[in-house]
Image 1 (tube, rainbow, N blue to C red):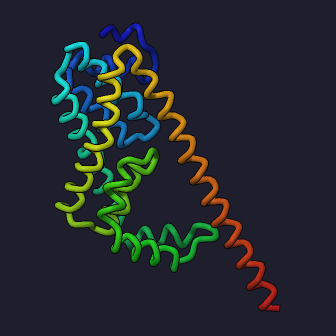
Image 2: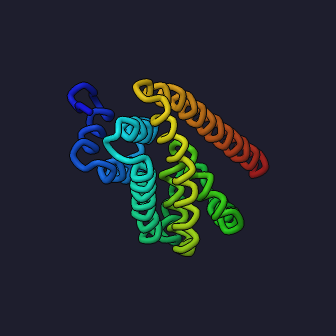
Image 3: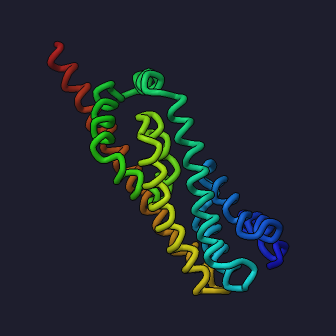
Length: 212
């Protein structure tokens, strides 16, 4: 594949695959985990398309992109582990409208549903990278984290790599439809944050009235 025929992230990812093959696809996905603005929705179907041209095997594409996902997730896990609970709580306490009780509730919820959260979180745009940080903060057992990260990443990667493989020259259709999903997730996050801020502001007003 000629990298000069593509621009932007697609061109960069293509050049990585031209030089390193399936390993290049894995490296690109590892970097995507660390820098979420790099979209896996472009890199993964492009890897599938490359495999369909015989420039790498489909199995190698799936193996190395999943290995890249796990590698990037582990890096973020250790960021969370190094940050630790005390620093996380201290940072959260400085945020407006955030209470220590919110952190405690989040911790309790993560303790009950951490494995499922890591698994399904790997399949949600934006959260697929960020979910590794609280797992590190809570020091989720490494074996559990790697297992569910691998399973979730393999499921996500397989869908997109196979889509690119089957669509061939039309692999860019995957990016178009995945972009819609990303926008829906962003909109949902905005609504949740807006609802949280609204509730907290009402609580403050109510507490102010009672104080009088």
